[in-house]
Image (cartoon, rainbow, N blue to C red):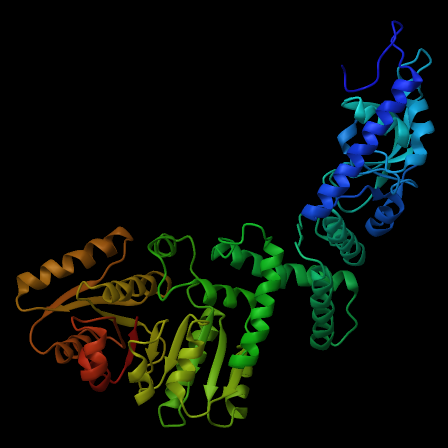
Length: 532
């Protein structure tokens, strides 16, 4: 016995059979409602007026007769409460109307096309709800309809849930307020949680206000939107992608991560005292103590030349502060970097110097535990600069970023000697030496201290092969005897202003207890020492 009503020899359905079909459809509606209440997966038929208002859709003046997929019909103009999402009838009182349509659809007279509105890829019944219901129960895949499209800024899918509709409505409002889809057609700004588009609007409003202060004039809404997108949002997105922050956030969008970075920026500002740009936060949250081999290769192969974007300088209130601040200021000015200053002294004179140098600088007053305060912030910088102090000596091994200890009046590195022993951190030093040679045109020497000339040459062969790979030239020196004294002696003979070094044989733990080679070099050398 067939599930649906019996058909006569003429292909027509009897009215009694049509009534039976109606009650089968009603039972399915009841079953769907029960399952939905148990699973909490309720997907009601959508209200056209509600959707049109939320998505700010505008009706066009034309319509066309087409075959429409029945599965794409998700709502109704006035009868969205009378049918389920699958168009099963929900009211017993619909029996006569539904059964009559069921009988007519297999009769000789047939039924006229229905009328639909289209928003995005979803359709809403303007006239013909019962015809859609019957056609769906008959298993038809399509139905003929006069379709009137409505224009909106966002796409609506047939499987859109009520929660997704809320997001789509918020996105439509965001696009209408900002016009970013017109001002920057390539922009793709989507979030996955309600309320986030409102946060984006707040970002733009704040950006507009600060632009007005900076330029001392009224900033138009369009100007603020494009400037925010170009100078704030896009750099943050590029940082998110560059540092791989999307890994582990498969169900989130890059805009979600942009807002997440903004929240971290706010927390870091409260904790650290510095207002960090999104790209700096992204780098600090994702990057390890050293660049990866692939990142180094790209830099040394000429695919990028910006190694320093954020400089952190720690001042202790002593005589060496002047050397440290001047060197940090020179680096920031040379590389177009931002400068973050930890200082126990009055910042007025230092701020004036930074302003005159055209360097963006921020200042935080320290509490007296300089080494720990530097460590708290070092991950969000590219290089740490300090004077030759006890705090600097305590950070030689602990800093997650290269530590540059400023010598008396040494200035920017021009002639660099790399102390190389073949261990990992001295390989970090060799990379920095090669980069300084390529990008800053620094003269380069590589030295190793060994028990014999042959042993020294074997160690230097690795350094020579590395530098030749990137067409970097250097003088190679072998010394013997007390390691620190020999490094300082050869650096002086080479005319170096900066010694660049990482590990040198001893373990980090042992050197933290006994001092070791880096500490001895720092005590003997009057110029700059850069620790990786």
